[in-house]
Length: 517
Image (cartoon, rainbow, N blue to C red; front, side, top):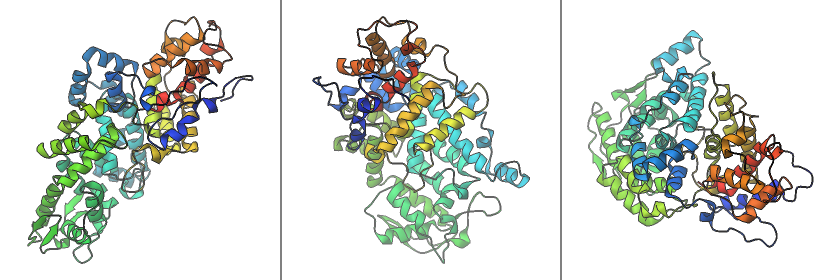
């Protein structure tokens, strides 16, 4: 972005304070003109509005339509609706998914396509999954469901794209993550343990009674369930009990191989099983998974991760304890835990305590300006995916098994901030993705009737993007970008509402007011 000569405050000085903010999980103050008061509390960057607070956390970012909806329904009914996604019509997004036909195919069909030479060794399928996931995050009406799909995709991470899961990663998304996102974690965990994607990713398909592979056993305990605190004997026994859960080399589908199962008694974190027969090995393994899913340490771990995702990087212990109890009382059912979280006093008090990750930031940008997907084809959606990838967080692409980090400090770097700022301008100005559907008159779409002054323009845009106006010194900094004062008259032919208007929108999105989630 080229800045005009004579501008009294630069883009860098306007938003530079946000970099240090992310290191602590709060938004730092924006440098203001000399002598002006400075906003310092993180909560001061977000509107004091319960509906907007819920939209910032339970969706990938407010849109004009979602704000109108939560105003009409009220916070309670809006949350109820999002927690029952099957009742939310999503025809437009469903139609969009038809542009990614490979993700709807079975494992058998993908493998047949590869043999016939009609797909590129499965990479086409895995990339379509990434593209489709990005599109759903932007345009699905079932926003909380999509946010939770991302949460579980990180918790039970299987990297996508990855060569070893070329034929099954899309099926894992559909039959494990999406099928159980609002179900019981115990059922999701057992589904993951019997899916070729997880068994391949964590090497259990190669684990046998003569050579148990401990990789899945260790990650099952440390990452998927109880967390640290296990003993090495727990890992060894879990690995032995999981032998036999494997993948058929001919079909690529899950099967239980009794001949590969290691028999003999096992003890894992209070779970004891005689494991007397190879034929009963699968049933014994599933019993262990149920035990781990309902372990108090698992309840506390998942409660903590949910509180970090939706409340703050350092959530209150009182909330974690409350959520863990609901989790155990409801036998790992997720919806009651989410309801308890979003209706808690701790959630209501957490405004300004989360910062968007790169993925959330870029998706929220498209939602904030209200752009539509490609009129046909998928070039724009693909471009958006690669833009997110260049910022370091394409969905499901994290290589280690622990999933993307969900705290601000993990994403704090000057390069990371610059990637976001560039993405804001690229998207708003239509440079990339150029295929998205944009209004002919962007200023008219975002601020309505032409405001009388530059200050009124900034106010109108801030209300659309943030649900609030800016403090006087920050509004003045925005108008100074155009060498104008807030009181300067705004004309319909002025560049600020013409070719430079996307720059103003990008500047607003570069600020901590947008970074706060």
